[in-house]
Image 1 (tube, chains in turn orange, green):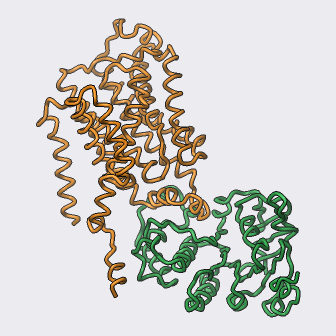
Image 2 (cartoon, each protein chain N blue to C red; image 1 turned 90 degrees about the vertical axis):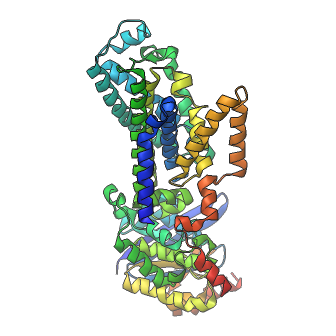
Image 3 (cartoon, each protein chain N blue to C red; image 1 turned 45 degrees about the horizontal axis):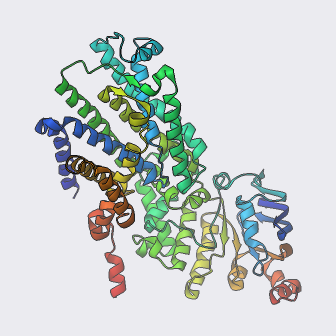
Length: 345
Length: 247
């Protein structure tokens, strides 16, 4: 079993590497797929594993975009002048400035979002269930509105970043691998985290928070840490998106609550909440579904997407992995044969 | 002998209903102390007050000499004062071993300890305690599928896993098969003598509490009615009246 698993992981990793070269026309699509996987996996950290359904994780995506952009611009030019020119002035970046700004920006975005997650978490983790979801959604919406009225960061027009200095196709592959690197890191990270005592503690919070309190688990502290970890990766993903998109604005691309903000939740529900592979499987299926409908059902794509969401939420709550776990428990190491044996005795 | 829990003149009402009135009692370190009383006499309210589920109106509650009446639940739990619930609370979706592992004392961990995977010792300890309460055979079953009595035993094992200094048990034998009760009395006594855990037990089953406790307090109508050794309590006319409804 372990050996098979190693081979499986090696195959997936190899596929990740060759994918953009085998399907060169889908470079940006595949990069977006990795983005979906990142936001789904990180959403599941709080939503699936800890029982806190956040609708505000998109806040970290948008904030990550802005922080990365501001860091990379601020290292070379005055941010106010730059955004005031709205991409019209002559602001050249050397290769070193571009890549230096990009990497520092992405890391900075991750760190900044972690810190902000602790602050927002401190204020919102007193809320439970749907109230937490609405509270965090409010944070994301408010942030979008605030930023779109803040001229120093470009206001409603957003920010235009420098274009990738190499040729266009190399750029697509470059961003694919940036997303893939973060995606693989998130997966390895959560796979490890869910096996630790910490992972068990956040599961305990999900299953019965009052009991966890009574057992002396540091519930608030663990909730804050978990969200900060999730925010770190989402912030980095946002930072990469900022450079990939070149131009972004606050409401439709940065704090896009009704698009990516909801998609990440649907991905997790579709794939299976609270499972390691669920968010990955869900992200792949969702992205495929979305792109197919966008291509062949144009005009009806939102209807199809809405139908998918309704069907998932109403009839398929356990998702693909949850369904598999129910049908094939032995694949997941869940032992029920003792119980059956006991009953037939 | 030093008092590990010292309750002094505690009163608690819910609206017009007086649940506890001027209750004072002591639980001595290393002993088993019982709390009895008819239904609705305020036993569980007193437990909830001690572990911080609700604020008290008046009085003081000390744990190991420290005032805890103003502290929230999790801070009291982190001082090593734990309780089990009358309506059992376990993590029903997980199996017995997972329930045990989650109950490791996080209060004794730095964040770096919490980020470790479970050690062989953790598993051995979990198995040992499951064996101790007689659930070893059922350790891999989903614990929500266990019978109520088995869930109670699991909750007790989880509490022991947490290495508390003092454990408050709310009706440990309620819902447990009478043939298992003797075994449970024995295990509670051993938890006290072998693991050195002070026990404070609410119990309706007189045979159980008289067998276990060194000191017993009796509540009626929210007030402390009597206290003493099991013999003294059994022969106290006021206690007998309270139970028979003559009060």
